[in-house]
Image (tube, rainbow, N blue to C red):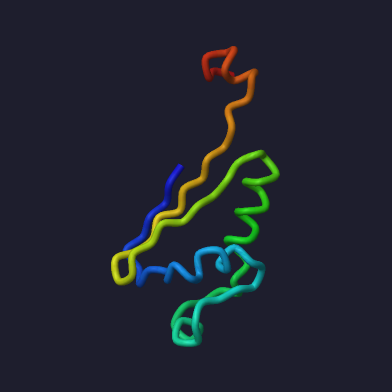
Length: 83
């Protein structure tokens, strides 16, 4: 699953840091963007708890894309993906 935006982008040097609890990008964004910086940390924790991974791709002034990959369980594979 991927989620993309057309925001200011995230510098490559910050890609790992944005998944830390309470991490916020530079002070210029703190005044304009609400939040406490915990959302991506929670997402990463949940995704990894299910054996998955999350990654970010970003281009400055063009936006970011977050991609989540989760493993398919043996049960799902055996059922052809149906419940």
